[in-house]
Amino acid sequence: DEDRALLDIILNEISKPLNPNEQSLDYIPIQYIVEYIKQYNNNGTSFDGFIYESSLKNNGVNYVFFNDAKFDLVGIKYYKIKNITYTYEQL
Image (cartoon, rainbow, N blue to C red):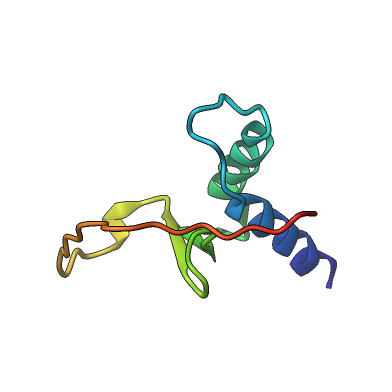
């Protein structure tokens, strides 16, 4: 289905890591698409958010919520990050 293929491309682009020390224009189209998804309305149904793959953790996921009033906070966990390891391959 074409809609699912396009959504997969968008989610793949969103999950790509960006260098926080650089101002990247590459992020602007993705931000625009996310705002479109946020505002999209089809027969009265809108999106409350979306899930995409983490670029930093294998099998990890990230969540984007557009309306936090629709969710209940059930607990907070704090973590101290001790080490981060990146792997890479030449494209």
